[in-house]
Image (cartoon, rainbow, N blue to C red; front, side, top):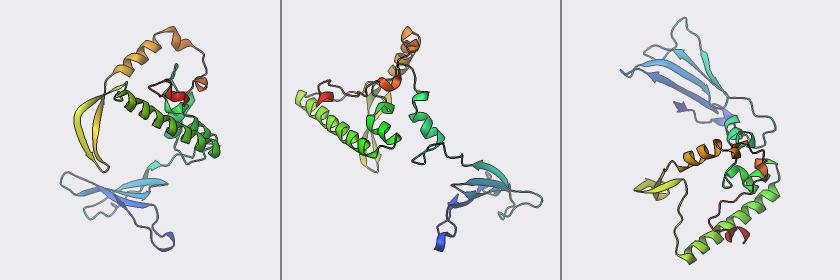
Length: 200
């Protein structure tokens, strides 16, 4: 697909064109549209021109903006950040519980900023405590591998899922805790390794 450059006065803005090719690298389907509105396709000849007797068929259209959306999030983004989709007995480290994120969702920019600063300071305090104890951070749900991956930000350690959260979730769902009517929004955000860090 070719994302067209924007010309003078917005000409060509958002436009996308391209083809679906066969194994023989011959164009078979023309694709055109605007990436922020809709995309359509149409069978084409080897020159890339529409076949006679065919019409453009819309294959994708952007979903309507979710109601009360402030930040142009998609329905998917709203869903994964919603308490409505949260499992029972939500982990205290779940990002849905972050006070800065929750304040931002409510449109309170000032509180969101101050909460973000507070969390970052707690994170720094946690690191100082860990270094003073000579301990390493050990994720609960992931294991560090011996692999180092090159990235645009330098070489990074690679972690793999250890399956423990699946076991934890299964234990919760099969117990009476899963039927607990506790309001998940009342759970305090607590991703800290040391309880003393959360109060600093």
